[in-house]
Amino acid sequence: MAVYFGDSSSEPVLLMLSIVVALIGLAAVMALLFIPSIRNRLLSIHGVVFLVVLLWWFNIQPSNDRNWQTDVSKPAYASIESDLVTVHNIRNFSYHSEFDYYPDYYDKTFDLNKLEGVDLFAVYWMGPAIAHVILSFDFGENDHLAISIEARKEEGESYSTIKGFFRQFELMYIVADERDLIGLRTNYRQDPPEQVYRYRIKAPKENVKRLFLEYIDSINALYEKPAFYNTLLANCTILIWLQGKKVPGYLPFSWQILVSGYLPEYLYESGRLDQQLSFAELRDQAYVNPLLKGRGISSLFSSIIRSQSPQMEKQQ
Image (cartoon, rainbow, N blue to C red):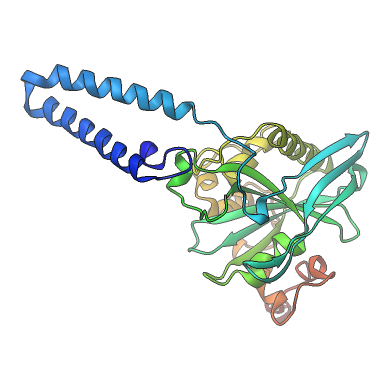
């Protein structure tokens, strides 16, 4: 698979080479099991081929200089002066549909003393087990900064879980206005539709501040030196957990971090979400999509998705 995908491409020559490598491996296995007379020779050939492929694969380097899709073409970066963090290239696209949009970016300075908390958005599109996780930092007065950890795609490239294991995507922290990052998922992605849930994390403000600064450090590090996305080891939930490890009271590792759709339930079980309701009730309350039914994306977007759902009003 590594040879087939190559360095962000799957040209015919790479297909032929991958078949050759696979056949050598198959021959080595057959000799090991059934043909003792040529076992050592074929195993030696296979060992050399495997080593060459491994050395070549680890020599593939990430890059910030590719023909990127427009929505990931401008990475964010930040500067810090005392308690003021100025974030550059905050994405704020205006959408007509998922792939029809007007690109726009802005810079903004955030005061760490105004940081009140953080929300976790879980986005589902293929059943309960898999979710994309986004954090949004709350600076008060309806001022939110959303950050999504994603695979950075080139023009004409689509996401593939399998390709994500083989150094095919660079890693990107998309820093955006909630109207862009969340609104894209609630209002415009329809194939398949995405279901969005918002959970308020229970954490001391000082811990939220440290987590935000860890994010800023990672954003700046990627701006200076790119890194590869990995489906298992460098994805949205694993990197959130790794950054959270640097904050006091971090969560122990759990299988529910790998199976990201169950992360909200794990947070609830760990006391990091509101305990006044059952998790089922909290999940109903967290459901964002009904709040936006019949509404477009406006300056009130962040307020609307934090209002009480009609379902919860009926229950009361």
